[in-house]
Length: 308
Image (tube, rainbow, N blue to C red):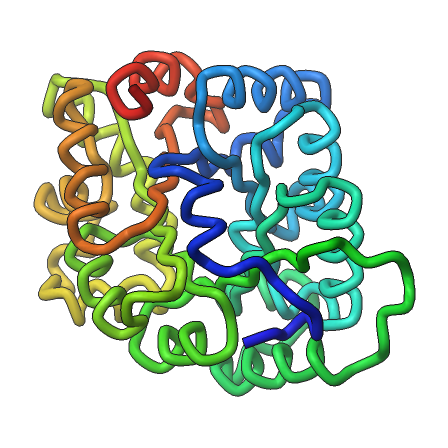
């Protein structure tokens, strides 16, 4: 369980360090550096336990973006949710992760994932045998070119974007845990069953502080529609009892309600509690906002209830 060929802090240490609730934001990939710095500093000041950024071929590079945000904050850990294993080789990812962990001790989590065929194709790659790709990638991180620069006192934990059985088993056996995305609490319970008691389980949860059902579901469908075109997510949802009719036109009401926790603060809090009760260690809130909005107004409103 050491793909960085070093000594990562125990998952229990990170569970305490992260707390119960953090933030996942693709919007920070699109914002200006000045706006992103200000947002990260406010998220830290609000008391959230971590801040995660994504990796797309159309926006900022995740390790560089994490470095900018780590430099703009004092305490909050950052994670990649996720760094795409088709975008850079294992040596590059390991060097980036160790650089950040040494520069910002105890403040970086390396999330890795196999992403999806369209994102890989956009980079000029071929998406094939994703489980084997991830297994080989972890082996190359552990047994590849030696890293001879200054090392962190504790290597950063590695977590995988694992949805289904075999990837969850790989996360359990070869890393410090799993970071599922686009999942309801029912998936969290299944993931915890596969992972067992020890590894980190850090699901993402889309949230929307909006009590009008029509408006909430309309905004929710703006969020779900893209992901429902990606087979990794729809296959996972089928395993949770959803069917093809749930995937049409941006998602059925049932599916949108399962993926996006909408309503008042108490409703969102209840969904976060459902993940924690199902076995999550740390739940990442993604505030749903139109046009790459940062959703800071929602995070401000939620913080007293979720972090108090």
